[in-house]
Image (tube, rainbow, N blue to C red; front, side, top):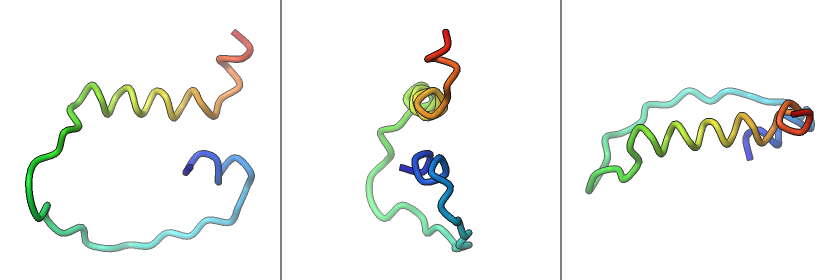
Length: 52
């Protein structure tokens, strides 16, 4: 959704806050899952894949 809001040019505001430590458990996101998620976000809102 972040890319979609930026794409349609909504005004954006930053909110600074302190992130508390995880209350319970461990994350299931490893480096490769995060990398694939980032690549998917970049290519989803780019015209380059369509041009290729």
